[in-house]
Length: 448
Image (tube, rainbow, N blue to C red; front, side, top):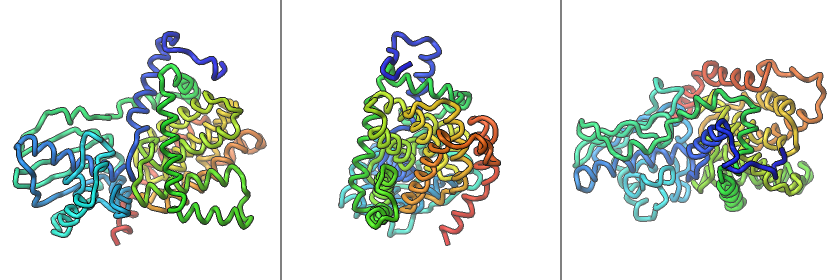
């Protein structure tokens, strides 16, 4: 079926409607705008929620005496040194917690710090100086996304628990009383992941062609515009992008579409990491969004023969593949998500634009897994820009290998055997079981 002959909602079968509903749920939870590092946004959100619920319950203004934040190892690692939105480059969880308390808006979810100003920043720093904030990683929570904040205050004690998703509040307790309110339903439980795990590569290709029926085109285009704007804002910030430009100018790197994409993505990633600017995420990660969106979109705008709908479908497929990979590697893996999740998504998206089939996509997925699955994540930092650049190299190598490489190289990688689905599941085992102690060691090193 040509991408220009897409179905309308009324034409969909029952199975197609079910697939469309699943895709919409994935996008609602994982393809969202987030300011700065997603885990920093989560901490600001949970802090803002704790303040709001106790002030509403007690009809008063909170004055904190002690704050305790407990995080799963992956969340702790990711946000430990990440830039905080609206702070002109300040980093880490303490400033995110206190700003969430002072001016955070829980109704904005991961954009809870949209209203930071100089006054709230000054008040946040005053709270930090008092030294009553405790932040720790809980090793028992490894393998999942979890955060708990406990605040002692003039209004009493309040605790809020997030489990299974960045804004998925599962428990609120005020002075020992379990509270049931609308915040509990501010949920992205991830039940859709069980359904997604059952899908095949061919299923996901079919799903991406349903975006037009679901009126998801605007959301996907908007995501590109957000991240393209982020790239422009970061063009003078990013040292990685500057180095790449100089390498192109000096002839070390070719002046071509691959170099252009590297510079654009590096600019976007570093702007997000250092200044906390807003990005459209993929897999609920802004950096993964930069790779999963910008790489196929920039390539498609240049090479897809102006087939706009084909590019839109490929962006949907990129997000779907990233979400699928994370069903097996975990939300916050010890592996670099830009490489193994968004890298797989962007690679398959480009092959889709090139009218490649499942065979070519399968070869490319196994190439990505075999070459950069070992790129580990040591938390959000400016270095994520360089890691994204390495992933882009692998993406275009994988595309070429899949479309033009020798069939003799079919099993060139030991861990990526069998089908694409089997290779992804094998990578998931390495990410979860094989790299079980990696996050803990990284955190120990980060703490000094």
